[in-house]
Each structure stands twice: as structure tokens, then as C-alpha cells.
Image (tube, rainbow, N blue to C red; front, top):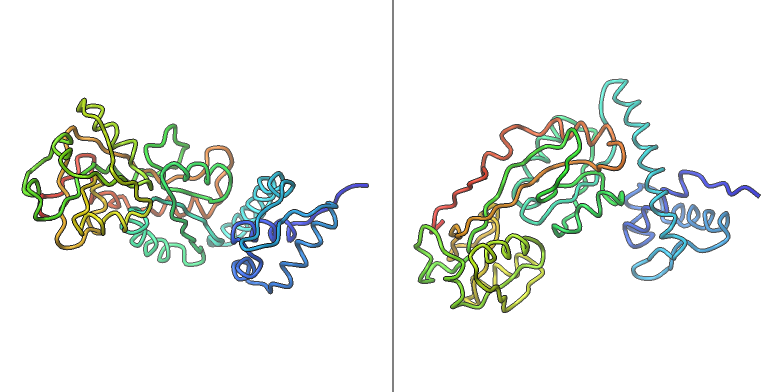
Length: 304
């Protein structure tokens, strides 16, 4: 007997898997929790097996994991069809799930969100903060529709460069090296090094490799704000992108490191499937001045 599933069932599965629960999925979809439960239950009856482990959080079963990529593709394709029809009649609409690193979320995205709201008021953008390495995985798996990728290559047509961001040492303002114009990474060896696991470890290791200096971080901190707070408290020193300047509290400084290392930031859609009209429209609306604050050789004055 043929297995018949419908788009509402697949949309409910994707929403619950992404939100981690039926209530949150209902809020995302704008329907009742009962309607979400009924849609998933109908899908499971059709397939003859559970697709979700009910719990906190709710997780896909082995069958659900196999189905999810296809469900995401179906839901995204249906959204693209609706968006094309809307654009044909005079405007863009829909929801774009956008992933980005922490510093981009806190510094660049607020301005972009304002620009996008003005250019495409019918498009909703949902932000997902992630680590550098996982953003491309989310994008190609269909978990998100667009992402700000770090050092991405190759890039599909339509991708937008947001500029390049150099690495800087993060120190307390009373640190002996805080007044230097630049700091050689070897000079940081006298302090405990705090490494952010959220990203940029590859760039930091590259700086130490170029310097011929052994890299021995003392602490590994997942949350960037926690790391900044620990440096502020005098626990140690760190290295992070210049873009983090606006996150740095009074009493701390960013100083360019030697050898110089930088990361490139690119806003793009996926490489393995067509972009929705909403994604294409948002990228086309990115102002050319977005990256003006951090060109390839970004300078953050010592003592900033």
C-alpha cells in the first residue's frame, strides 16, 4: 500500500525537531499544540512507527532522523513556491533562519536586521547563534536557510562578503603589555591563556604556528562572555577577533597580535540546493558599507 504523507505533517515534524518540544513548535508555527500533536501522530500512523521520542527535549527517533532531511527539503520547497508567487505579485514574504557566530550576532546583525526590516517588512528573520565549525553543517543540512560563514570556500553565486576581521590579544588595562601597539604571541606565555571553544581556535593556533611558539591554553571556555569576564577578573589573557571590541568592558583592551592572522566573514545561502527568494532578497539588500568597520587589516587602537 502506498504511503501518503502531507506537507502539514512534515512541517510539524520539522518544527518539533527544531524546537525540542510540541509547545514551542506550536508557537513557531502559529497553531495550537493539539494541532501539532495530531499532525505528528497522523504521520506516525501513516509510517507505522514513531518519528519522535517524547521527552524533554523531544528528539527524533532513528526513523525520524532519516526522514528529517527530506522533510526539510519539502518544507523549504513549498515555502519557496509561496515566496515566488508573492514576489510575482509584488513583494517578498516568509521566514529566513539565519545562523552566525557570536560576535557577528552581537555586532553586525542588529544593523542588518534593521535594514532588512525596512527593505522587506514581510520577511521574518530568526537568528541562530552557533560556533564557527557548525554553521556550515547547519546550512547544508537545512537546519538554517542562510549563514555567516568563517573562511568559507568555494562560495555560491550571490554570496556577500562582510569583510575580514583580524585577531587581537585581550588583556586587562593594567597588564604590562596593554600599552603596546602590537603584541607577539610569544609574549603572552607568562600568563594563563583562556581559549574560547566557540570559534577562532584555528586562527589562534595558526598565529602560534607561524611564530614557532608552542600553544598551551590553560582554560577552555565555551561562552565568549564568560571568557571576557574571566580576563576582566584577572584570571588570564586571550586572543579574539577585533569585531569583539564592542563586547569588551571598561578595564580591558584589545591589542593586535603578531604574526597577524585574520578571518573572513561571508553571508551566504546553501551550496547544495536552490536559495529561497527570501534569502536571495535579503542578501541583495545588504548595504555595501556593512563591512566598513573591519577591513582586512582592521586596526583597534591599544587602550580602546
